[in-house]
Structure formats: structure tokens, C-alpha cells
Length: 546
Image (cartoon, rainbow, N blue to C red; front, side, top):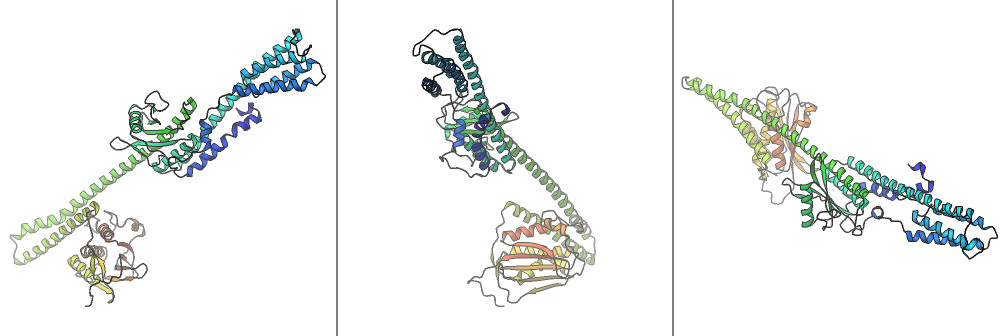
């Protein structure tokens, strides 16, 4: 399109676009602008209407025609020369003025030529055939020149508006593609709209109850009347407010964000007060911005729906896993209890003692299963509150060994705790569960009679207490470490029994106390679990002499 326009006109078309392109590029990383901040000039240039000033153009024509008359008065040449000179002048003026000023230029130059240059000078004379032909040429050139000039100017403005629209959409889509969340996209889109439209904008999205909520990135705060108009636009699916036929008394125009027949929100634009009417091109640009924002809102809804579906599927999978595991774990001890109670009435004294032992073992297994389920429920519901008090590491280890029961009776457990290890703040009940679960885990995953070593100490930087339980088993595969403390995660070589909740509960109990747990490899081989608790010296620590 530009190849048919002179180079000067091309430059005039491109020059106004450069500030727009620069502002759009910078606005990708722009910060929010508080309400009332002056807007950029390029936006005002876009919305400013530029009607042709006939008064200015007629003034230019008058000055040029009379200037030629004054200059030619002192040149001793034939009056035909000035006729051709005025013809060239009319052609030159057609590049600057419009159709009606061109007709005025033709008429004025003809009258001036007749009055000033045709003999007798300073008198009007009846033109001959040749002179009449010259005057007819003036009118013909004026009509053709004015038409061409109007067409070129219209093409220039169309190209400028088309370039502005394409540039704005290019930078908007590129910036939106680089965003990851709806908040980032709203920030980018609204800041670009603010700069391009020289306006203040707002994004209104419905909440779960269908009520419109203004996005924090909005650059103006909508009042009750604005929200009422926006709600009507949301229900009706058509623009309302300023510059529309309905509800035009409010200061902003409200454009629905529509995708696939559904209205996803409202794009509100508050333009400068001096703009009293919008052209179709300006309407198209605003609606185009609304379409781009609607695309991202729809994409965000799809993403949220996909994540929700994924969470539902994961929840269903965990639910099935829990039911399968619990039902499987309950079958064994219940079968033992049922068989033992059936034989207990007819068994002799020695057999009764053995059956009582089996009943005790099954009961402890059921108790451990129910305790793990209850503890996991407490962690997930957020109802677990740690009761911190001064604790001694040796007392906690001994309590954990007793809680582990007969599982450790045939295993050598070596406890190595420095005699000068100070007291520290912890929840004794939670720490007993933590250490007992780690000891049971070590007993289940290591060969019979394999030793277990328990060490404790004070780490200097950062200051914290650590308790480590290490075994001599096969260790932990590196690929299992990232998911070791997740629910229902059990290793491929795990023995039968258990729900895979023990280590998940360990981590939850440690987090509740402000600590943490980590797994690794022991120095002698095997697995090592280390729990950490923050340590701070306090003057009111009770006497720990033993």
C-alpha cells in the first residue's frame, strides 16, 4: 500500500507510530499507575480527531495566489506566462489542501490573473477562447487535484490507524503469551490499554456467587453505579455505559468479555472527558482489546478446570488407595482375633497363653493402624497444635523404644548421646511418635538382628538439635528420595503390612514443632533419618542435673 504514496507521505505516516510502538513495548514491564496519574501523550494523539481546517487551507491559498500576483507584477512577460504559472500553482496546492479549497484556489487564481495580468491591467476583461480554455483547466485541475489529495489523506489515516491497531495487538498478544497467571496478564493488558487509550481501565470478573469483583490491577475504582451498569452488561452480553445508547450517564464504557457465547467478565474503559464520540475504528480497537483479554481469561479458566480435574482424580486415587490399604490391613489382625477367640474356649492352658499373645499382637497392630489414620487426619485438618516444653533427648529415645514394642526386642539399639547435650523445646508426645515411627521403619526394612544406632547432638550453625537413627539395611534408592515423605508411598521392597503413612506423619509432626526431617545414607551403609529442631539458649531452663 505504501508503494503508491510519496516518500514524504510515508514518513508522515510512520512518524506518529514510533511513540506508540515505544510505549507499547515499554508497557510490558510497566508498574501499576495510581489513579489520577497523567497519561502518555501518544494515547491522546490516537483519540484526538483531526478535522481538516478549511480556514487555514483557504488562508494558505489566498496568501500563495496573492504572493504570485505581487511577485509577477514586476516581471515584464506576457500574461500567458502567468496563466501557466497559476496553473502550476493550483497543481502544487492540490498536494496540501482539500477539494473545496482547491476550487477556491482555481476561482481566485482565475480572477486574479484576469484582473492583474490580462490587459488592460487592474480591470476585468472578457477572456478569449484560449483564455477560457485556461480557466476551464483551472477548474478541472482543481477537481482532480482535490480528489487525489483527499484520497491520499484518507489512505494515510487508514494506514496509520491500521498500523496502530496491528502494533497494539502485536505487543499485547506477545506480552500475554509471556505471562503465566491471570494476575500478570491483567496487569499487562490494562497498562497497555491505559497508555494506548490515554484512559483508565478496569477488569471486572465474577466471583463464585456471580458478583463482579474489580481486579487489583485496575487503574480506577468503580462506584456502585458503575458496578450496576457492568452487571447489566454482563447479563445482557452487550456494551453499556458511555458512548452507547443505553445507560450513557456513567463515566465509563463497559465492554463484555465474550467467548463461545459466554460472558466471562467486563472490560471497563474511562476515556478523557474531551472525547465525546468514538469512531468505528476506535470502537473496533477497544473491542479487540476486550477479545484478547477474554481469550486469556478463558485460557485461565481452562487451566483452573484442568488442575481441579487433576486434583479430583488424585483425590479419588488416594481415596481408593486408602480404602484398599485399610481393608487389606484390617483383614489380617481381624482374622487373627477371630481365630484366636474361637479357639480360646477349647484350648488348654499352654495354648491359651499362645493365643493371648497372638491377640495382643493383633490388637497392637490395629491400634497402630488406627493411630496413624487419626494422626494423618489431624495433620490434614490443621487441628494439630504442638505443646512445646523442655525435653531431654535420652528420655525421648527411651519413650520411643517402649512405644515400638516387641519389634525391637531382638535388635541391638546403640544410643550415643553426649552427656552435656542441653535440654531443648519440643512436644514430647509428638517426638515419641516421630522417633517410634522411624525405629519401626528401620526394623521393617532391615534384616533380623541388624543393629540400629541412635545419635543426638547440637549443631552450631544454624543452632539446632539433631537426632539421627541409622540402620545397616539396603539403604534408600536415590529415585525414591523426592517422594519418600509423601502419603501412601512405599518402596518396591517393602514388606507386607502398613499404609505408607508413617514417614508422612513424621514430617507433619516435625513441621508442627518448627523442625524438619531428612533422609540419606548412613556412614556404615544403610539408611539414616535425621530430625532437626531449632535450639535457643534460655535463662529459665530447668535444672538438668542427673
